[in-house]
Amino acid sequence: MAEINYGGPVKVAGGDTGRGCRRFGGKVALLTGAARGIGFASAVRLAGEGARVCITDRDARALEEAVGIAAAAGVQLHSCVMDSSDAGDVAQRIEEVSVTVGGIDILVNNAGGSLHTPFQFMQESDADWQRVMDLNLMGAVWASKAVLPGMIAKRYGRIVNFGSKAGRYGSLIAGANYAAAKGAVASMTRQMAQEFGPMGITVNSICPGVVMTERTSSLWSERRTAEEREQVLATIPVRRYCEVDDVAATVAFLASDDSAFITGASLDLNGGQAMA
Image (cartoon, rainbow, N blue to C red; front, side, top):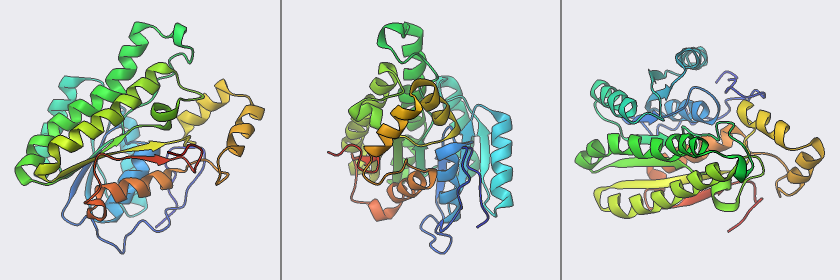
C-alpha cells in the first residue's frame, strides 16, 4: 500500500493492513469522526481487510480529502457528513447510511476530543462540560442506539468505543470534563456488553495514551513544556508515543471475530505508561 498521511504531523507507512487477510469480507463498518487521525487510519485498516466502510465527520471538505487520499492508495471509503454532537443529525444520517448499505455490522465510536476547553477544573464552564459530554459520551450513545436495532435483528454486531487513558488514570493535557466523559464511556461499555452479549453483539472500548495527531500535538505543546514532554516520554516503557497504526490495529482486532469472546473490556493502549 502507498504511504498515507493520516492527518497528523508524521507520515505513517501503510505497511501490512491485512490486505491478504479478508477478515471483514461482507461486513459493513461505520466510523464516526473519522476524516483524519486515528479514525481515518482505522477506516483504512478495516477497508483494507475487506470491509465496506463509511466514515462520518462534520467537516465535508475533510471527508472529501480523506476519501481521495484513501482512493489514491487503493482503498475505497464512503463518507457521510454528520455532527456527532447533534442527536437528531446522528439518528437521521445513520438511518440513511443503513438503508443505503443494508445494515451496519461494525460501529466504531471514534468522534471525540476535549474541544480545547480549559485544563483547570475551576475554569471549565457548564457549557464546556455539556459540549464535551455531548461529543464524547452522548455521541456514542446516539450512534449506538441508531445501529443496535439492525444488529439485534441479525444477532451480530461489533461496537468499539473510544475511551482514553484520561478516563482511567487522568490526563496531563485535557481537563476534568474530558476525563469524566471518557470514564463514563468505559462504564457504559461494560453495561452495554452485559445487555447485548446474549444477542451476539460485543461492546469494547480502547483507552489510548497520547497519540500524536495534529490536534493532540498542538495541545501537548500548549500545555506542557519541552522538558515536561521529555519527562513524560521517559515514563513510557516502550519509549515512544502511540501511533495511529497502533490504534488502527487494535480497532481491527476488536471489530473482528478474532475477539469474539472478548466483551466489556477497556483495553489500555499506552505502551505500559499505566498498567492495571
